[in-house]
Structures are given as structure tokens and as C-alpha cells.
Image (cartoon, rainbow, N blue to C red; front, side, top):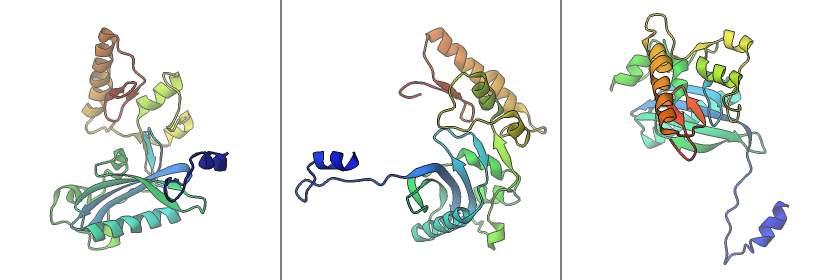
Length: 223
């Protein structure tokens, strides 16, 4: 069928046709921070279009993607944050499919690392060794509990996201709930999201789902 489609395009040297490679699931993501070309923070994880579940993904891909980020940082003398998305080609190798120069919600897995504060705020900070690069604990498992409860309740279909069962949820923790400062958790779930839903109800606006990470209501065709 694909060959028939290509023939129908009448591709030739005079009429070029750009053919893209078909990549395979699953999707992966990486989050990195650089300072003066040096990698200071790194996380690698299984991802999805609407991902609110994070844990470190170890293995050969972890090491290769870390080396890729180190090379990018050095070659481009990067300072700042970089998020990359990957998928596998037919040979099983990861291929970058998207690049965003911004923070990623996967940063929640890095909380508590002794060098995270310096990596984010100290303009002179560079790791003295690979051991000082900020990475997550392999046992860290974070998710947004209200996102999972809304999925379980059927408010929206589990499309392009990760749906956990209760057993899996008990193995992790909420990304924003902390005993020493519960205010962000309470403000998000009791004030921010309810107020936005009430406003949409008053306007009669149709919405698709709630993004509990950013704190917004996702609507058809945009926000």
C-alpha cells in the first residue's frame, strides 16, 4: 500500500518527495541541564504525549542518551535546559524526534539530590565527576494522584498516557505532595483546578481533560 501511495505522488528528480521513516513505540524522553557546555542534570524515562508518570528508565538507552546530551552540550556550548523525545527505528536504535529548550515535568524525580540546587542556580557550578551529575534514584516513582483518580473514574480515556492501578500507585508518591509543605498540593487540587472548572462551567466551555501538572484545563484546538 505504501509503494502504491509513493507511485501516486509521481516522485522524481524533478518532483522530489520527502519520505519519513516509520518509528516504533514506546516513546522515551530525556531532560538535561547544562552549564557552559557541561552536563549537570540528567534524567531518562519512558514517555507519552500526555505523560504524568515518571521513573528512571535504566539500560543501554540510558547511557547512550546521556552521552548524546553530553556531546550536544559540548558541541554547542550549551547553558540552560533541554528536553528531548525519542522513538526506536527498525534497528532498535533511538532516534530524536523532538527538542524543546525548556524544563520538563520529569524534574520531579530529581528532588532531593544534593547538587540540584547548585545546578539550577549557581552560574559557576560544574560537576567534578560523573557521580556529581544530578540523576534520580532508580527507585523514585512519581505521578499526579488526581490525574490517576480522574482516569479511573472515566473522565477521559487513557489515550497517550499511563494509567496506573492501585497497586502501582502505592509503589510511588504524588509529585507535588510533601509533608513539610502541603500548600502547593492543596492549592492545585482545591483552588486552582476547581476555580478553572467553575469558570468554564459559567462560560459553557467544552473541555477535554485536566492537566494537573501545569494546572490548566485542556480544550479542543488549544488551551
